[in-house]
Image 1: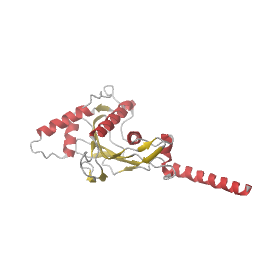
Image 2 (image 1 turned 90 degrees about the vertical axis):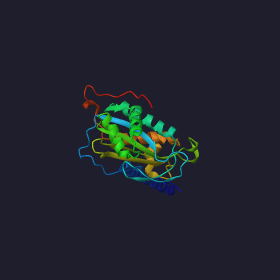
Image 3 (image 1 turned 90 degrees about the horizontal axis):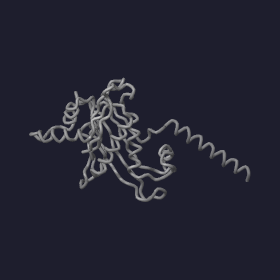
Image 4 (image 1 turned 120 degrees about the vertical axis):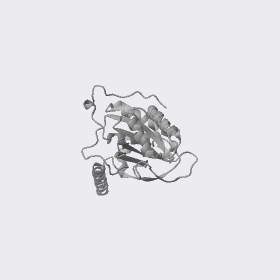
Length: 251
């Protein structure tokens, strides 16, 4: 009996060691995907950034389908997402950028005002989304425009410690260069929370959540922080004296 107990403990210890090594190798990149960029190897210089924010890939009332992002050309299976969700995500995105104070920000409210003006003056009603983004960036003399799409937003069904259905979100962020429409950087976050036993590679989320089942907002909050941590923005100390953050005036 004592021998069997010792063997069981040894097996459990070996399991933990393997788990730790896998976690170290994989890190927190298991649920994000990067794509080729047209940026220079050293990374773009972004001192002035227009934040348009998030848009739904499919609006409420439409059927789920495979959607091609008109800016990046990548395709994702998408579900209807409400504007309340994209507005909340945009608020979170801007607040996180503003806290870092890494670059001068043009807030979503001002950016969308220019978008509206461009659409109203587009007599042919055929301006390409990428061209419109370029025009918005040029209007503010920006180095880049930040825009994202939301492809899936499903909140959990249940409570912190017991669910019928977990939260699931998918969205991306792209930095567009106004001068030529080049994609400086793009990143995708695609996450459905799973229990630790279902996915041993998801220890990072398990630790951050404290073992709870997250809401869609909590899961998305993790995702935005993760994407922004990899965005090529300059360190705060390199900013000029006239640089800072613009106040978010809303829509």
